[in-house]
Amino acid sequence: MSDEKPILKAELDELRRIRDEIRVKAHLGRLEAEEKWNDLEEKWQDLEAKASQIARESGEALDDVRSAAGLLAQELGNTYRDIKRRLLP
Image (cartoon, rainbow, N blue to C red; front, side, top):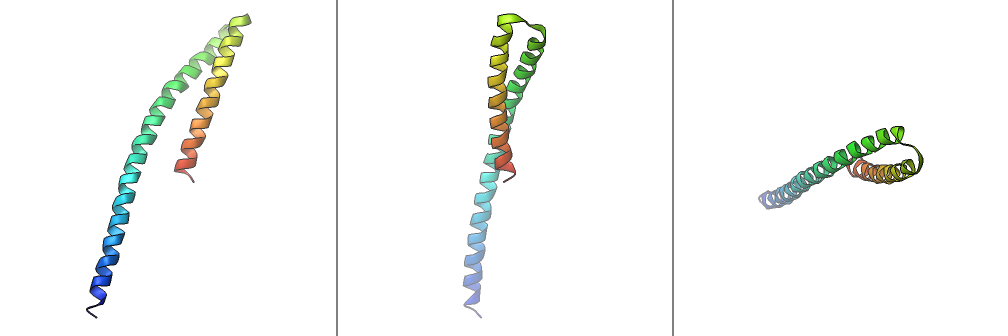
């Protein structure tokens, strides 16, 4: 019976170590996700502004704005999908 106490203590110590490691990684992951989200929100507002500008512009300027908006939309989509994949595996 006394042999079981050290085994249980070792198992609890290992579980505690794993739990602490997960807690730290989860915290860092939240911070990273929040930072990415804030960057994305700025880009989202830029995209919305460009979309509004597309509605007002015409001719050659329209092609430039449309191209920039398309690239920004593609970047946003890729980053949103990456965040979703990390949060919802």
